[in-house]
Length: 412
Image (cartoon, rainbow, N blue to C red; front, side, top):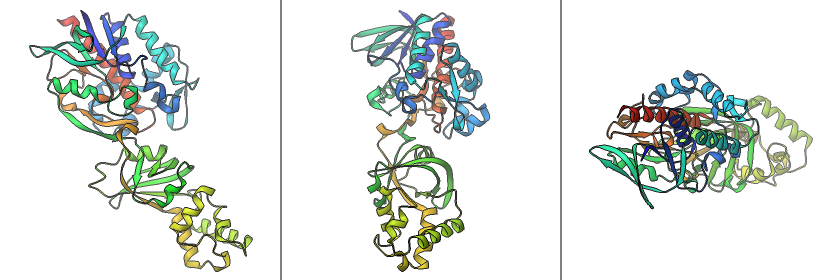
């Protein structure tokens, strides 16, 4: 008999286990993978952007979905608290552009190791088990069933992740456990995900990454998001940091018309860009349009872009009309792509959807439907933009769930 079984050994699960064990609870973490923190170890391209060095009001502005639910958890364990926590665990941190916080080592593995080390030092145990169902008696959760048998406890914390990156164990299996306890699951959809576009011409530049470009996302004709940074072309659309951020503002792309405006030359106004192109045309007089385009864009994008602006690639510069030149300028500043859909959910960084926040106490993370059952992390229907916000949610909800479960155990 354990006091608490934590289902899932990711960011939220390890945090929950650590704080519950520090409070004296006998804690067992049931993780299906051979190693803990599989998804955490690949976040931030292996560097682990573990939080954002901002205050709570600014943090809330970066949570488009059910942000108010997080207020208690974040107030009790803010980004600054998280930074202090990891420094205490022996992980020196640094703050980069956009207030993104990383380990000084740039190694996500250091964050995983610190959490595991702290959790085990507090007395939490770990077992490699695939939890298949909950043990529920008289309306209360009192353990779990695994492929190897039953593990009894006084409380259970489900921190099994969402449905993104299923190879890391975040495969949506936690939703079935929540349903067993009577919880409503808001249908999971991708968030922070590459996008599929209707236009395919630019996709011929797949693999190309553009830095320092500006994007604006439109819903119907209304701008809903702007960003500046890195965008990449994929075989069926676009990816990269600015695309992932934009995707968090897209809801039901099949029902609503979304488009992405890309400014390929954000440092130049249309007038200055036109003047530069005129100068290039003068210097390259007698050459082809292809040669002038290579001075404006990466080689991989030149030929597709020539098709988009409808100027023959080998047309002589001296034959390009003023209308064609003006259209070139306009398209460089307003390169439009219509969004068709998200890429599959297993390519998303996080999942939008999950256990309805209406059925979880925001002050304790305890189920409002089943005694002794708590939730933490991505399994809850809360998601945020890129920049360390989603991992902070995992740490804050994990800590609150762990402490609340430990208090619950002491009260019975």
